[in-house]
Amino acid sequence: MTTLTAESETRAPAPMRQLLIDSGYVLIGLPLALIGFILTIVIVTLGAGMAVTVIGLPIMAGGLLVARGFADLERLRLPAVLRTSYIRPAYRKGRENGGLWSRVFAPILDVQSWLDFAHALLRLPISAVSFLITVVWWAGAAAGVTYWMWDWALPSEPDNTDLPELLGLPDTSGSRIATYTVLGLFFAATLPLVVRGAALLSAGTGRALLTGMAQFQTRISTLEGQRRAAVSAEAHALRRLERDIHDGPQQRLVRLAMDLGRAQQQLETDPDAARATLGEALEHTVDTLNELRALSRGIAPPVLADRGLPSALAALAGRSTVPVELAVDRDLGRLDPAVENAAYFVVAEALANVNKHSNASEAWLTVAHVAGRLGISVLDNGAGGAHVAKGHGLAGLADRVQAAGGTLRIDSPMGGPTELRVDLPC
Image 1 (spheres, rainbow, N blue to C red):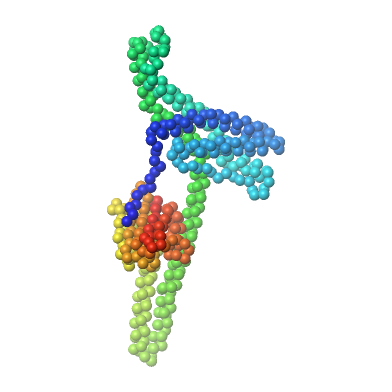
Image 2 (image 1 turned 90 degrees about the horizontal axis):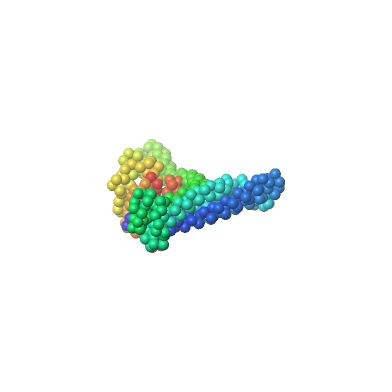
């Protein structure tokens, strides 16, 4: 049975490797910032000054495209420092067959293009400060630690500006070497922390201006996807409920009405036959009530609202025709009602498919609460071949999970086994 674990975070590089990455990022960043600043300012300013003429707007658009190029270069450099994935926002594009002016106005009317321009302006002073700090700390560490190697090459006459003299120490070769070595060790010990801070100072500005819009767009897209998934899941649930009512209780109620009508006709001519018909009608009534209770459990099971998810899952496992081994975290308390409903629906649908289609002899249900996520695993030793395509029992399940902000994965090769894994945010 598969054990559910939290997703691993991006592993940080070794300290020395991270120091070299941060140092390279800062040292290369200043010349890039200087070139980008000059080109962007000159072109955009020239275009703005000539905006009253026809030629000014294309020049301004060209300056914004130059700023976009330097912004794209910076986005390529950010992941190594911030330990994140590459993110690029979607830029505004000109209309198809819109002609030259449509392409000219596209960057001018695009918000992200002006954020790229703002980054080109702010990046130079920030990169200069980061560059200065990094160079000073590297020079202090290298010069101080190796001072004993080249002290002999310095003039030996006392100098009132010598550091030992300023500290009130005797101006001798030994005290000089000791003082500068201690100072170099201090710079060397704090070098990774200081350089990391200088790199994050520059990278943080880039992340805010260059990827913030992309993250906002991603969030909007995710919310729209969840909304569409919720609508689709609700429509699928209503269609399934309508189908189940039509195929089950509705047919039984029609049969019940026919039995009662026949019994009414038999009362005067054949009371014994009428009594037998009423007995059959009573059996159909009981069966109809049982089917309605089963349908209601799939909509809003009382045990879920009253006793929580573990008890509701235990009830589902107990009703399964295939033996289910249940493993639920002991400390799994009450969760958000939407999460509990989604988890219950997932397990109910998964076990229903195990019972109907898998030909399995045993199943395992595991529920774990790890790092703010609820992980669900349903594993069976059946024939496999399960997927979420239309017309199959798992259709609509992926939409329900997506609507709750989770992810679903099915591993079901032909011949089995089948494992359904769901991850829901708590």
